[in-house]
Each structure stands twice: as structure tokens, then as C-alpha cells.
Length: 333
Image (cartoon, rainbow, N blue to C red; front, side, top):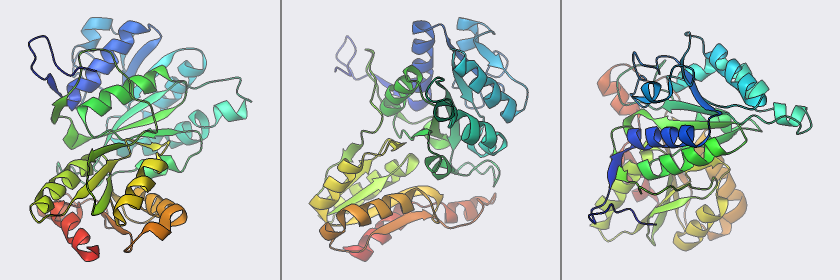
């Protein structure tokens, strides 16, 4: 697949525009696809401007501004999905999925099972997680591990523009409810995205950097911090392999385990709280399935179990960074 445009130059777009392109292409391809959420329409075009221009293109019927009620947004979307539509619901901040947890965890996730596979819920819930923009404890959490815990939900955590577009198109074309997690700080980041149509299958991890000495499994914005740490340590002759799962459900265990077999050391980095989080699940999986290949204890880099502070220095202190990743790597190399 070519990532070049006609003049041979690499086409580079933002993560935000990659998601918008996926929405645009799938809405053109399938007229049962529609968007709903707070402030996504003509007036505001999304809190993070992802839906810019889509209401003009497709009209207010297919890009629906909703009341400020997350339970109504997801409840409506679940009803639309089981009657044959393909809703893409945007929850403005991931923290606010808490207001729709019954609709997500007890309805969307369970309907296919409860009705003996007679009903499907082809629903995409797009929502931004993560801190780093000083908007305090109600708007900065990373709750993706909650959704990993609910049977029936898929969970995507793309870290690049390329992955975001390819995974979102797969999610929209699928027939299962999926939580599509987007880190706020990723929206302005740029990367190569092909002009041709493409999709990325769920459950296939991507090795973002190859190395022989230690494996880092990282998610979302932490992938970029892990890559920075790998570049810094390369100057010291250390080869750090960075594995990006891309989806947490399904989880590509094989790629993670194969990397651990190669390097013998594992650090897991994610921005959610450490206790019972993403890092805990991946650590447990490797301990169960590949402990004999480890030459050192598994180490985790995650947030301390605390609300995200509003104060910029305190927020910077609790959110893991390159320095903490490198310090953790040094502990086991």
C-alpha cells in the first residue's frame, strides 16, 4: 500500500483529520451510518473539531446535535443500532461515559447474548481519554480498563493517525459495540495516511520500534513517550522494542509474548491508574503465559491511584513521562 500521493511526497495528516476522513468515507459508503453527540453539528463542530464540516456535507439528520444527556445519547444509539442503523455516538469526554454506564455495560454489551444472537448492536462510541491539558479530575481520566472488563464490548486504543483511520473504518463496518478511545493530546499529532481506502483488523498489535534488550508495551499517547525513551536509550546502545496493542479487546497476546521471548524483559506503560488497570491485565497475561522467558521482573509505568490534579505541576507529576519510563527500564537492565 502506497502512502505517497501523485508527486511522490508522503501524505501526512493529523490524527484529528484521519478520524474525520474515516467518518466521511463511511458515511458516503453506507447511508445507515449517522453521528450523534453534544455539539458535533454546524454550530460547534465537536469539542475537538473532529466533526468539522460533516453537518454541511450530510445534513442535520445524519449529524445530530443532542441534548446534554449521555444516557440519552447511548440509549438512542443502542435502539438505532438494533433496528438496523449504524450509529457513531460521540461522548465529549471519556469521563462522561460514567453517565451512560447502564446503557453501555448492561444494554449494548449484552443484547446480542441475551437475545440468542437474534439482535446485533453495530455501535461505535468515540470518546477522548487522558490528561495533560489541565482540565482537572472530571475531564482527564483514562477509563479504558473498565470497558475491557465488560464481556461483549470491543476496545480500540489507536496511537497514530494511520491506526486511528484504519481501526475506525473497521469498527464502523463491524457489527459489535466498540469503545473507540482517542487521547486528547493525539488530535494534533501528524503521521502518514494513505489516500487509498484501507482498514486495519482488530486484535493485531503493531511493533512501532524493534529492539533486542527490552520490550515496552504501551498504549495511546504513552506509545509516543515510549518511542522517545527508546530513542534516548539507543544512544547508550540499548535496543528497546515498542509494542502497540492498538486494540485492548481483542488483545494480540501472541505479538506481545513473541517480543518478550525475544527480549526477556518487559515494561508496560499506560496512562490509567495502576491498580486493576491496563498494565495489570497485560502483566498478568505475560506472567501466566510466558514467565519462563523473563530474565527480570515485569515492571509497570502507570498513574498513581489518584484523581488527576488541575494544577499543571501536579498533573505533570502524576502523569507518567519519558523520565519515569527510562528510570523503570534501568531498574531491570
